[in-house]
Length: 243
Image 1: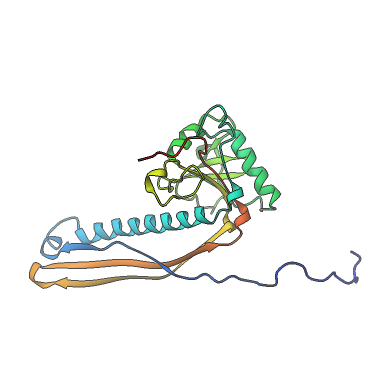
Image 2 (image 1 turned 60 degrees about the horizontal axis):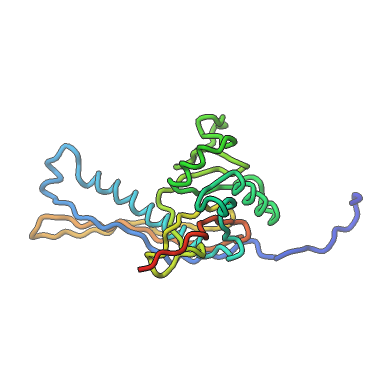
């Protein structure tokens, strides 16, 4: 456009932000024997607090992942590329398909991820093009997220041992026994949003037993942001188990 010429009318939505409702809570209550804690070299309260913090993060993570899987459009939940010959096996073709799907939705190249479970991680190491994290030159001041194991086709591959399992349709079934397949989730960091609001620890003393009860917890919210920027692969060939 020539300098000084008039721009065309604005396009797209006019909003500059989206509301995030804080409607979830994760906590991990525990009890400490007061007269024991003050005598031990390793403080029980310190150790239990650290464990509780890790448990809360895991509970929150599973809650967010479960909600994310529920919000992925049905058309973006597919079977493994080679399912015709070998069910439930991740290959390079799956990464190619995921990259193509996100490219077609105009998802930014930067900030793409792949969440993968232990079973599929072991298969990933047999793909020659996969570059593990120990072979990647990290730029200074760039933190490496927990579980990061490498990159493939522009995706940061992150191992999650707590990925919720899904059924044959790629959804989390109300009948728990039907959830027998761990999905592989590809996406861009702006496909979903979450945030914490309140972090505190409630405490009370049980006088007669000389114990202190602690309830560390935090409130958080999660919601879809750009759900076209996420793509799930799971086993759709193997029939759901029956009781």
